[in-house]
Image (cartoon, rainbow, N blue to C red; front, side, top):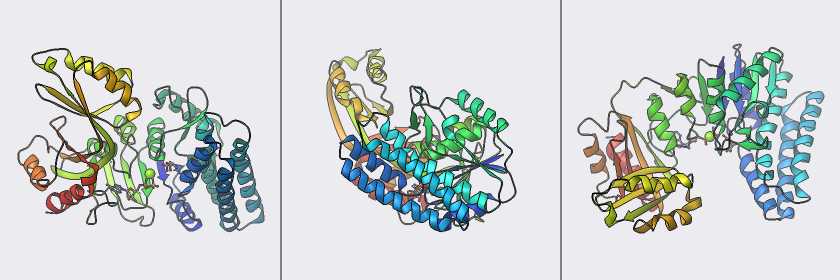
Length: 438
Ligand code: ADP
Ligand code: ASP
Ligand code: MG
């Protein structure tokens, strides 16, 4: 059974929801993962922020306008009175739940519970739409099988077991519909797979049911060779290997949640990226195949902090790196890039939550310097960090950009540079003009 995932813009209006229904209902059984309607999760974040700041009035203002929007959706989406009534009941239940947080003390889990409502609404409304049109569609509650552990990582065994049991005991359907993004945590609370996490849900489900293909349907014709939000002349890439796609997703290509590729890669499941508004286009196919050599695409990840430790103690010393890395391990902070010289070590992190504590500990080992507002630009392709000529091309293209760090040779398919975020747009554009389009 194939897994199809549709993002927020694909279910963002009544028209696109109908388009999605027609794409789904092609007679072949599938499992459909949906995001919240475009914009909803951002509204829910605002509601939760206001409630955590005890600003109930502002929260209620957004809740009421969101509720009104959804009542209009329900009014226009269905043709029969019965379905309009069923749609209204979905909204009543969901909005009563959201409003229940506007009185009393706002609990710690409240924000995550509110954030989940977008997907709960979109999937319930979409299932009713399919049923009204005579399709055999069934809603599968993701909160019954999607789970993360205490490290916020998906519990693959639990997901596989619970989802397959649920599929076995449910009535047979042609189209199973479920929520992307949302899950439960170890404490049983409602949680999520981080923003953009519906892509991740799709490949986790694909792995759990051993799907023959996961299709991620979005608002663009596939994976582009550069970020279309910053660069004008980007082109679609027809194929990517799992390794290439996972590097690009991890280093900021918004089209895929950073961890999406992993479950597909581990289980050899092809992932296809497709455009909901242009279904005949084959999109981008991601598989284990990486025959074509050369530079494929670039991506950029913002919000990076660079840390430099200068120490005389590094000279001829072993165990120095171990001591430094243990500090990061203790504070559960991942390191992305590393560069060493005989007297200094530079590394980057993307989560500055424990920066002050980390710096305090690092000072034991030497002088510490911090650079905020950094961006990792990741250049990805097959064999590019092994065969001659590719590195020269990259650095020629970037001859006017101040580069803070370089990572080369960590893998064969990645050259990364660290730059100031203010130089990001110019860097990406230069890579398109002088490298990708030359
Ligand atoms: P969805 O709501 O369907 O999940 P997203 O907004 O999360 O869609 O992802 C699609 C968007 O990702 C595109 O509209 C595009 O602006 C952005 N994007 C960033 N980098 C790339 C890239 N390399 N290729 C294609 N799209 C990209
Ligand atoms: N609705 C969630 C978000 O906006 C998940 C997703 O769209 O993938 O982040
Ligand atoms: Mg997305």
